[in-house]
Amino acid sequence: MKTLRQIKPGRTVRVMKLHGEGAIKRRIMDMGITRGTEIYVRKAAPLGDPPELNVRGYELTLRKADAEIIEVE
Image (cartoon, helix red, strand yellow):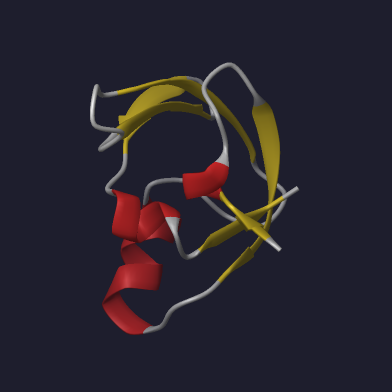
């Protein structure tokens, strides 16, 4: 299992599953990150947090803790 946090900049991945529960999971889904969504990892900050992503045609930054619950392939 790979998580979004492990993906290096410049790669495109597809969301397989969202782990986590409650408000955190709902907030991620509200951002447009759902099963089957393609995510392009644009870049990461110097210390790796937060990564900058392209999701459904818009730019998004996500905390490492949130990226850890997104399973990708």
